[in-house]
Length: 425
Ligand SMILES: Cc1ncc(COP(=O)(O)O)c(C=O)c1O
Image (cartoon, rainbow, N blue to C red; front, side, top):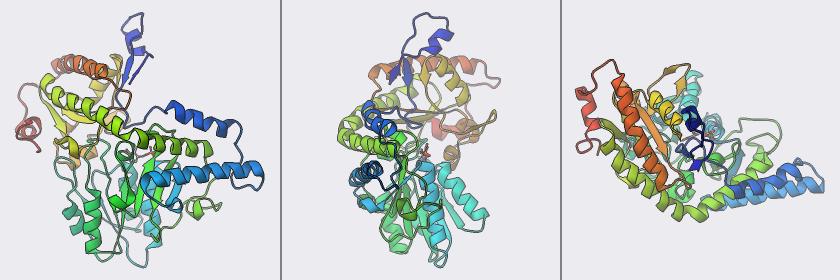
């Protein structure tokens, strides 16, 4: 997607701003203009509290009912099985805390993976620290995908919840959630299965029966909707205790006056994503294939991360690690050149921790420090891809020239990652 902010070019002293290129759709997506239009009446005129009794409030309540029905239809659920939240983090938290709290008599064992989003991992770890959960963390393979048999092998008689993400937000690895759910159930039919589908919902059909899940997290702002609205799908009969208490909203599972404009925008965005799915998918796959193909050719010692087969990876996601350069330095240089991208890892107070996802996949920490993530969206063009392919190689070359260590002789442990032929397969 190109925008004409052009601050990068101004910093280089040009007078005409060139278009900026946005390659960070996994972080958030621009709200679709139709989504904004759909939201406006609920900001301007229909702002009433849907819990009130008068006619204006009831109209607002009806808009929420309609949004719930639309979203339920998009994921193959019953409207009563959709709980609105503020977004993906809250939905993940509600799934983990809510199931554990409602299942104390049956057990407290929780299974998840080392490459989950921090909304799941940090919640799981806090539940363990607080003595609420006993945790088993399963590592993925070196391509970031989780082996369904390994997840099932971790399930015990007292396992109350398994939480495995559908698509990884950093390396785009797609997990076979249907197979995971099938094997988990075969081992313990009483174990609930949760998936974080925040990244996949934008690109793939996320149908709760086809995935076979009891709980599913998704959020509006990753699919061209607004920030501030998400949902947790909760299959009828799944034990879940509300975690935000107060008003009786969302069938007592999530108190708080509803964010009507954001909920309406969320439903509009979901319906649009369904309508456009095939066209968007083909477009993003084509751009993704070009980058996956060209990047390792143009940038020496660049390791693609995540699954090699496009069918095993999230459309639009291209992730890699560049040896001997900090990912953050590359990102700053890309920003100056007009390209917005991400490293995929968290950056805290100046010290850049290598990505927990790449570490979970077994990548050496030093190589993981060079991680980059480009995530394409429906408005990106071939010209955007050309621009990245032109701009990135000289940036890497320039930064490597500044490196205090020799950059032409990668250590042996980098080899399996850098060698595309013999690599992670
Ligand atoms: C996989 C995954 N889960 C959860 C979240 C959190 O979603 P939200 O920003 O809506 O809280 C994100 C956001 O990056 C994500 O990528």
